Amino acid sequence: MSDVRVHNLSISLDGFATGDGQAADAPFGHAGERLHEWMFATRFWNRMGGGRGGRGGADNAFASLHDPGIGAEIMGAGKFGPPGWQDNPGWRGWWGADPPFHTPVFVLTHRPRPSIEMEGGTTFHFLDAAPAEALDKAREAAGDQDVRLGGGPSVVRDFLAEGLVDQLHVVQVPIVLGRGIRLWDGLETLETRYDVEAVSTPSGVTHLTFTTKAR
Amino acid sequence: MSDVRVHNLSISLDGFATGDGQAADAPFGHAGERLHEWMFATRFWNRMGGGRGGRGGADNAFASLHDPGIGAEIMGAGKFGPPGWQDNPGWRGWWGADPPFHTPVFVLTHRPRPSIEMEGGTTFHFLDAAPAEALDKAREAAGDQDVRLGGGPSVVRDFLAEGLVDQLHVVQVPIVLGRGIRLWDGLETLETRYDVEAVSTPSGVTHLTFTTKAR
Image 1 (spheres, each protein chain N blue to C red):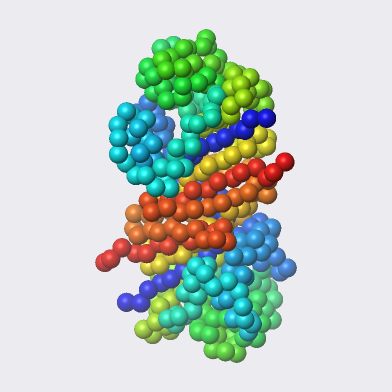
Image 2: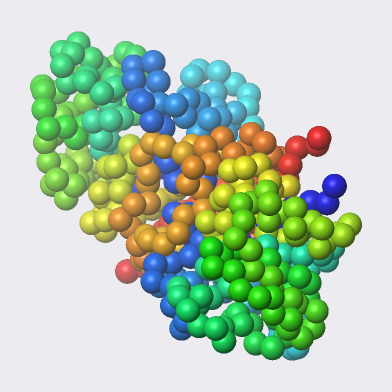
């Protein structure tokens, strides 16, 4: 069976994956860009924007795992738009006409709407569904490829709690955010189900990988 | 002026430096020994117990910084004994007749008692004092040497909040404890006052060092 993978989920030392006060002009709240500076500096990120250059080391290697072998993404309502996007019938995500997914994307929301076909292969589908049910849909759409669980933190936490994640890549950034949405809550002893590795890199972040133990 | 240093403060991924349910037979509560296995494996630790052997790599190098150049320690009541030790007039700490401090140790408690002189140069003094006042006493006792802030997490947090810590060494262990006492609460933007480095080691832990920016 295909894997469920989380990539490039950046958290602060105190475990917040997004800050307080998310809004249309602040997708990560008061955290601003601080959780993702390591990623913006990579070749992976520059190439995605059509540019060149950037760091080519370990941060880039980890970041680049985001795309290959993915057939569908699942994301939470909080990733698709700022609070209240459900009231805006014209909202089509943060990413412009050609979003960087290039696959079906299943957006979990209690207020589903008709699917939206974007350029470049991305289609947004809207689902009011529990994790396992959403995963069934995404797996069907992904064929023999993997499913990316795109965040935000609450959705990743829900899937982790139900044992539905095979690969989890967390990037710990050495800042103390103080407030926001925590990743680790309710996940006591999570590490016992995974092989865990940690590696710090010259940018100052630490990559943590959780890989399901051989079945 | 001498530095205030924190060494070998081990925390879980979710930021807990001690678990839930501290007791005489469980100094770190439900965390057990999981936060300190990396340290027990070092040459530093074995030598302290009069033995030999153990790992000699980066974990050992960091751990060994604990002793040199220290003239006094400050610790919280929760490090000196299990909850309620103040009701036991015979309690002399966890460490036996010859505690591993070998300097004056100032124990912060709202119920001070007479000083206790132990073997090997350790004397426990008991103070009902705020961080800055306790630090004045410890600095006086330390002469031209540094003051170690020995924990637990609540005391370290209080000193950090007041800007009284010059060197902070945190060891992040890849486990999710779920409950206990958190280190980072109330310390938003702490990193802006320090030069921060992270390095992961073959044992799987990540050493984080916070060093006060040049004054």
